[in-house]
Structure formats: structure tokens, C-alpha cells
Length: 92
Length: 290
Image: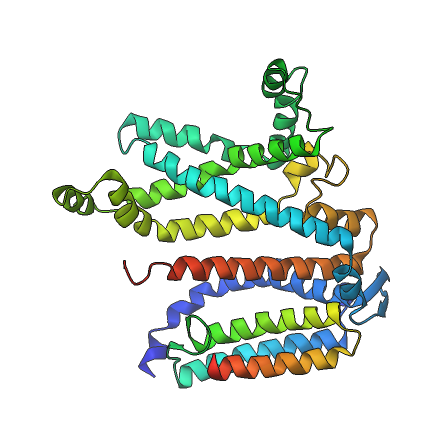
């Protein structure tokens, strides 16, 4: 199968594989221990999946803000997004 | 393990999953791949990292197009949602009147989008168009090809005419699904028409109005064919919305990398707003009604 038209690169492949692993992991986690809706620092009750979505969406915007506003390497933006992700998943 | 035995119906979702994978996920992956490369042709590409995102995020014309798009969608929602609910409340509940009004209301939805643009070009022409000639006949100069304000008024009118029926039909379906007992109870309590609407009809329409709001937001935010046919993004750039600008970049200039980065930002904006609308509508007044 020729996938040249999709123009794959190592970073994008890593990104999508990570997302897929997260989704599979969340599904397995859900089967083993079903989520309980709860209220954290976010202004709404959330399940584990909701917090993942909020975390990922927020991370995308953090990256965009970093690229748009800063001239430093994207890895700093990535680190902030990672912290945000952990904070939302744990205390969101 | 009993839970798994009862969950076999999930396999029925598989065809949809496969279709969505091919129609949405794979193209989205390709767009992500394109957004970080300079694509010259098949097999000829260079990795550029976040270059295109930087370029797109600092593009003044894109910022202007985004503001236009937000104002357009905001105006459209502010008019269409209340108007659609109002029309649904006025429509006959049963009998032949209900059938006729449903068909008449649905007519604008059946017309192809590019034809809608053509209809409104003719309708608003100052020389032969019914609307344009009538307005100009009253001494008001109205020409959507020359004035930005007139172009906006025409676009908003066209969009409202085209899509309010969808909101009306959804609201009508929501209204018809309310059991008669609620209205009888309201009558016994001596509730006014306004109180009946506010405490019974509106809360019961929350589900359909959420769908209407989300559909109308996404559609109006992605609007392309109608303004492209009607104004072509003009006069000047006054009606160049995001999608029109995106097509100019992707097709007109064949800058696939920046266009892909632009598309992803566009997608993220829609995702954020849709999620916010969904959350607000799901949670508003949750304490009072259920």
C-alpha cells in the first residue's frame, strides 16, 4: 500500500500513535474501573473522558499560543501542555 | 464479565466507525501531515516544523476573516434561533394546515447552496430583482456589489431565509413531543402563555435547540458556497469569511502547507465553540427543570 500521498513524518506518526494508545488505554481503564462523574476545579462535573477531551483541546490551544506568541522552542509549550494535561486529569 | 456479554451490540457501530475513519480521520491525519511540511508535489516535500502555523497565526487578513466569521455566525444565531422558535410556536399543531406549513417551511432547505446564491443575486439586483428594485424604488440606494453594508445585509437575509426553517422544524418537533398533560396542568394552574412557554415549552425544547444551535453554528462558521456565489468575498474583502480565504490560499495560491495549518486552526476553533455551546445548553437551568 503506497501511503506517500499522506506525506507521513516521524513526528506526526508519533503524535497519532500516542493518541491511539491514550484512547485504547482509556478504554481498558474504563472496563477495569468505570469512571465516576465528579466535580473538580473545572466549572462542570466531568468524567475521565471529558477531562481527557478538555486536556487535549487545552493542550492544542497552549501549543498554538506558544507558536503564535513566542520565538522559543515548541518544547516549552509542550511541557506546559503536559502539566496542564496532568492537572486537568487529576484535579479537573 | 457479564457486562461484556451484553455489549455485543457495539459491533453494530463498526460500519459507521470504518466510514468515519475513511471520510474524516484519514483526511484529518493527512492535513496534520501537510501542516508541518512544504509540499511541492508527490514525493517532493520538506519538513518545516511549526513554520506554517507561525505564518498563519500572524496573518492579519486571517485575523480579519476570523472576526468577520465570528460576527456573521453570532448575528445569524441571534436571529435564527429565536425566529425559528417563534415560527414553530405559530405553526398549526395538527390537520392539513400543519402538513402544508411543514412543506412550505422546508422548501428553502431543498435548494442547492450555490443556487441559493444565484437566487439572491437576482432577487437583490437594483434593476430587475424584486427586493433590490423595491428598496431602490423607495429612494434607498441598495447595491450589494458596491456597498459592504448592503453585502452584509443581503448575506444575513439570505442565511436567515435559508436556514431558519431548519431551526423551526427542529423546534416544532420538540414542541410536538411535549405531552398534553403538561399544558393541562398549566391551564389548571392558570399559567399565562408566557409562563407556559418559559417553564414548559422552552425547557422541553432544550435537546432540539442544542442540536439546532450546534448545527447552525458549525454550518454558518463553515459557510462558503452562498457568499462565494453572491459576493465572491467582496466588495473589497468585506465578506471574505474564513472558508473563502482558506480556498484562496489552498486553491488560488496552491500553498498546501499554510492551508493545512489554517484548516487545523479552523477545526480547533469550531471544536472549542461547539463544545462550549453544548456544555452551556446541557447545564443551563439544570437545577430548575429535568
